[in-house]
Amino acid sequence: MYRIPLIAVMVIAFGCLNWRDSIAAGETEVPASASSTVNDIEWSQMTVRILDPEEHPVVGAVVRPWALRASNRHFLWLTSKYGSPGRSTTDPNGLASVVFPKLAKGDDEPTVFAVTLSVAHSDFCAKRVDVFAPVDDESPIPDVALERGFRLRIAAVLPGRDEPLQECHALLEGDSEVEPDFVRQPDGWLQSIPVKKSRRWFQVVWLPPDKPPQFGKRQSWSPDDPASREVRVEVHPGVRVVGKLSDDVERPIERGRVVAWCGSPIKKEIEGNPPSNESLSWVETASIAKDGTFEFPSLPAGYMAQFYAFANDSVSAQPTDEEYETCCRWFAANSLRRSETVRFGQVRHLVGEKIEFTLEMEPAGQIQVKCINAEGHPVAGVDVWASAAQVMVPNSSTDFCLPVSTAAGLRNSDIEYMNFKINSFWATTNTDGIALIRSLPAGKMNVRAENSRWKREKIEAVAVESNETTEVEVRLQPRP
Image (cartoon, rainbow, N blue to C red):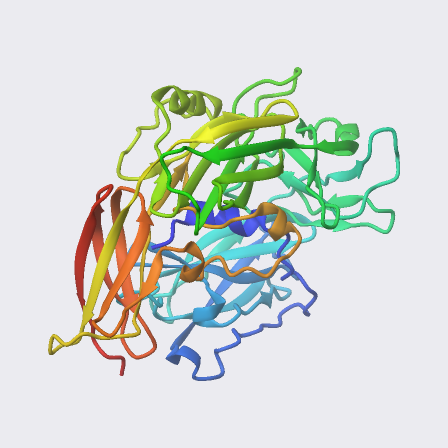
């Protein structure tokens, strides 16, 4: 199961979603596979009503599915499974039709009982909401209420210059909610669709081609001060981070990755501005050289960074108690309980022009998976993978060392983050039906196995220990 809080972060941090293209009011686009036999999907349909704060119908709001709920699990709508999600626009009565699958593609294909919808309109704040599927033809039509907000107009400039820079982007606090689109105006400024007044902090990022990002100072705006909603922001190079793995990792490094998850402070007053409620975040991934060194050319100054890594058969160690407490205070998460069954990041405060540090590592574990058929014979060519978890204080989690890049997403790089083969913790069974998944942090994790001929099987809560091999046997069932 994918953990939705971070996935929401990924969808938002990786640039504006260009699904608000014009389609006429009242029109509906079905998913790309709805009219074919792709994935053998059986489809359902619901109607929703979109209203303004005065409960009047909203015409021309764009509605599309974003995720599915089934058996208390939350599944992203993945194009690889369901085809591109269809869109619809509300008619003069505020009504829109939504097409969605009856079953969620997963281990047991449970019934979809609710759909997470993204709703957008140029005059209202974007919204993401769960809507229950109708039980029968007599089920009432659910209402979704939008709210009005404020527009931000922002320009990124070089020090001492007034001309707006191209290739700039604006980030708002509140990773777990729908972000507004920022549209580039003819004069080079960025203008947002309406923003909730509770979203007070923003940051500008300049992404010059083939160069490290530069960042504007994190700052706030006020719904009571129109002047604060149109600003020029100077951008400057971020903090260069140069690191190396601890000497106990055998060289040369043949395979490895470091992920830096960076966040702004929460609930702290800065220069008289009101306290923030949620964090701005920035995520980058770096490869590890054969000699064990790595570099992040530019991370946002003033943020707290949490680092995660694997290399050869080692993984980043858990943070010290002091690092962990520092991180919790920074993100106002003092009550967060630390669990040894998941991996937390080692912590550094991003200050100055350059930081050098050693990332402490420890031996990894591994899982040996044997796939057999109903008769007990080994099955070759089966993909197997493990979903080790990492936690980012204050409250997000994802697969360990997933190669995420906010800058790549803002540049609209085409990366399918839900493809399990990019997380490096997968393998394919040999002629003996055996596959070895390496470089896993100690803890409990799920193991899955499948291919085009065999149904997906899942073994839950497999315990992995450092310097040990855990053996798992998976009995496969053929696909129809």
